[in-house]
Amino acid sequence: EAGVTQFPSHSVIEKGQTVTLRCDPISGHDNLYWYRRVMGKEIKFLLHFVKESKQDESGMPNNRFLAERTGGTYSTLKVQPAELEDSGVYFCASSQRDRANSPLHFGNGTRLTVT
Amino acid sequence: DAKTTQPTSMDCAEGRAANLPCNHSTISGNEYVYWYRQIHSQGPQYIIHGLKNNETNEMASLIITEDRKSSTLILPHATLRDTAVYYCIVRVYSNTGKLIFGQGTTLQVKP
Image (cartoon, rainbow over all chains, first blue to last red):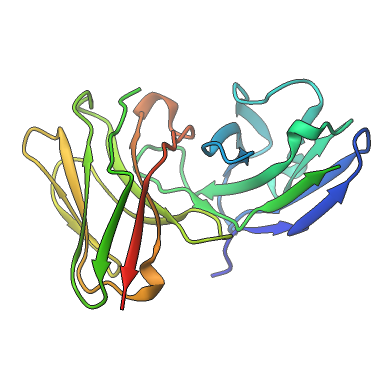
């Protein structure tokens, strides 16, 4: 079974540019999550999709971040325009069910560097 | 959300059992205890979870005290590849997707 895959693994962009991160969840997983770790801080929740619907986006930092999951399969996270403080590692995770006893499985992340 | 307390770092000799403690004294009755680890430059890796009973899988064992206020993750035969940051997380039932990662325990397995 393929795990959660994220693309690209690394991205270096200049301040003010746009970047789009992609996440492919484990096949059959309706629940998809985005997390990030910035500047040596703790890993923080960003948002949660159930199929194509946003279940919880309470962790999204501001309106420069836009997450989509059209068709309920893969998801994209767009940062526009990128700021220096957006640098960090962005993780995607998926789970089979929206239940507390259904583990989240994480991808290896996209390391974003904004210069 | 129930908070967890873990030691900042621990050492373990290769081949020995690694016992990683976690305190979660404010845990509620329907909240699960989860353990993840992060090996350098990889994403968090799911290890094990439990509610009340002790659990075992191919990676580890989870021992939860009867009052559920603390737990211990046991890696029975630690290898150098088990060197990682280990996170103990209480998963809130009503907010199932929002895992709260703390600082975790840095486990160093030494030859």
